[in-house]
Every structure is written in C-alpha cells, then in structure tokens.
Length: 131
Image (cartoon, rainbow, N blue to C red):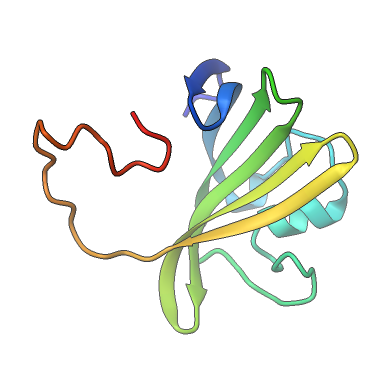
C-alpha cells in the first residue's frame, strides 16, 4: 500500500509486477494509459456503459496497478464501496488492456458475515486459484 512495485506469482494470473496505494477521491491519477472514459469508470462515476451513473460512497479508496510479466496485459484497479439498489457493497473496478483490446469490469462482493477460522485441513482449497 505504499505505491512501491513488487512481484507476485500464482497459478491463475502468472507473474505480475504491481503496486497499490490508498488515495483520496479528489486526488486520483491513472497510472496507465487510457482515455477519460477509463478514469470515469475507475472513479465509479459511471458503469461500463458510460451512461449509467454510479458513485463511491466514501472518500478514500485503493488503487492498484499491475503488469503481467508473461501475458502481455496490464490492469488498473480501484476498490471501494458503492450503493447498489439501496445496499452498500464492496466493489472492485478493473480496466484491463492487452494490445488494442480493453475490458472494463466491475466486481461486486456480497458480505455474508464473519468467516470461520480455517482449520489445518482446509489448506485454502476453496480459493479460486489455489494456495
């Protein structure tokens, strides 16, 4: 969370070089390339159709930037809380680029309550990408 690059590898994404930080809403600057539409989407001002209004509920968010070391793609993310149909949700917004291809994605997380402490036999097998 100090905007210092670090490397991470896992089975799902491969090797990624990236950095993350907290930022104030009015001080957001995109790290990667992209048009104003990408900034509007990442700041939760609009959904990916760029016509439907949305907004982060708080003033402080997380920004993450990553470069695939073996896949040829980049990703810029913002994480925050949004109100959707009257309920507060944790969301992540992604702008992924590979060459001329661009995808904007919003993931919405539904809070299900506290997590039970894992046991040694769990071994993180329920993670989508393993341990």
